[in-house]
Image: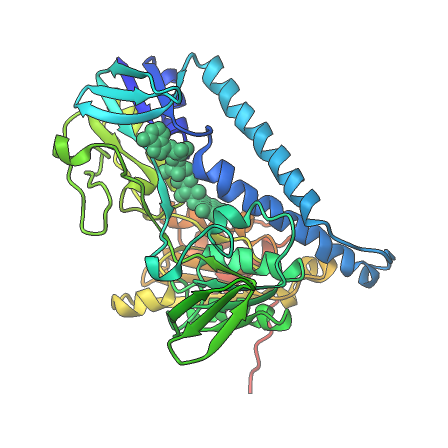
Length: 461
Ligand SMILES: Cc1cc2nc3c(=O)[nH]c(=O)nc-3n(C[C@H](O)[C@H](O)[C@H](O)COP(=O)(O)OP(=O)(O)OC[C@H]3O[C@@H](n4cnc5c(N)ncnc54)[C@H](O)[C@@H]3O)c2cc1C
């Protein structure tokens, strides 16, 4: 079986390795660097920067732990260099995996010619045609930059340019209070930039419950990050000195730079989809069935190209499923338990249904919660802000959860397993959790569903 994959992001590269392991002859076409958005301009670089910001915060708070460190300074240039080194090491890692799995990596821009042929245009202008039995499209997404924002990559930037800035700007307006806006907004705030976040929805992190967003907002206020919600941008005027942003409520913001983080759209450019009759939905995603096959037999699509959460772990999982299906298996892509993570401080992590969604859908539910403040481990590490909240249905099955607090993104896995497997709060709460760890907050929240949290402070009046 010959398989050609266009795009070597998490969707494409994991599909390639799985297909090779299953015995296929695999060719991957990549126009840029392997690893895609995630590795080069997304997940990994943002988290590398945030790791430096964490070290800074720890250093500034060292005295609270009896450790004295009088001269903490930051150098964004060196933070960026560390990030670049880390990224290039991981890129080499994927190239090595390709080599060791016998995957043929072709550099160039891929385009569909027919349902079995992909044309590759190389940098030197030469063109090559590859014929295969099955094709996987995994070309990812690009930032949405409506014209009215006058994106120029200098004063009006996206996350891509933000991740390469060697000097923090004095001030920055961040348009969009979603995951990327919150993460990069807080990072630059910690680098000394005066940050203003503008969000059109009623709250930042609009997908999550209001109580979750409020906890992050509290921290933003402490750090003097200004947040406008239920407000949009009416006009952008790029000047020599910076950017003048007029909000819909008439407020005028002036800043050295503006970061656009209002979302991403599937990257379909140049793939020749219409010619082949591959269906695209109204929002511009490629339509697939639940085996991830497009409307054209033998051509599959995954990751940010399709209408599932634009997340690396979703793309990877879909890539693996598509590879298995291309090789004769009949796997279904299920998105019931997709972890949603925000790597701010405090971190935010959630899975399954939110409380507001349960209410909207009329699902009878119960809540259990536990504050990190009441937990020994949180006190030990000095990170007491936040809460674990679990949502169970009538049968006590965990259908959703959120964590705001230290290591929330790592802690979430236990609750993701619960939602994925349909475990009850009673069963999961019965598991012995190690002490002292942050995971005890999950156990307490699970017990709290039944009013049996031992360490939760509840007032009996
Ligand atoms: C700033 C930022 C932070 C993020 N943080 C996280 C995070 O913490 N966790 C998380 O889960 N997700 C995160 N994401 C989202 C995540 O990066 C994407 O969901 C993920 O990379 C999508 O994977 P993909 O394989 O679908 O596409 P991509 O990773 O976008 O890869 C697509 C690849 O296809 C190549 N390509 C495109 N067109 C062609 C063509 N015609 N021919 C050849 N090659 C082509 C591109 O060069 C690219 O390498 C973040 C995104 C951004 C922008």
